[in-house]
Length: 136
Image (cartoon, rainbow, N blue to C red):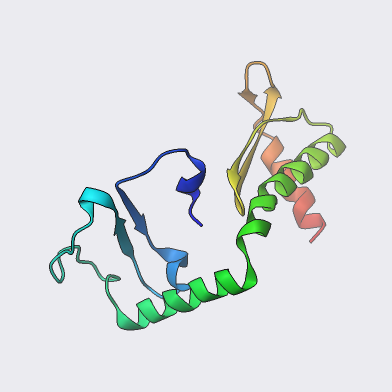
């Protein structure tokens, strides 16, 4: 569900916002273990903390995630983005990307002049964007 699950660590504290409530303003702090205790009202304060409507929106988002099984397709998106970027780079005569990192829709591709040194190829992003725009 969260990117941290792929990092091999167990955090004491996780902060959440943005997509948590499908665009409705809401933030959250999730604690576990010894750090799990109730904060006083307003103790974690902030504009987006504790809104009943925001919490209802977050529950609706979580229901959709569970019902539509959105997690497995999200895991495959990174590989798909990387394959598409590699193919585009090859068609444009660019070196293969040195790195393709990320999870789901948050995947980044870095094109390089020389994969051994990882020296960046500055014109590559412009060429990739131009090709993507051309294809709509």
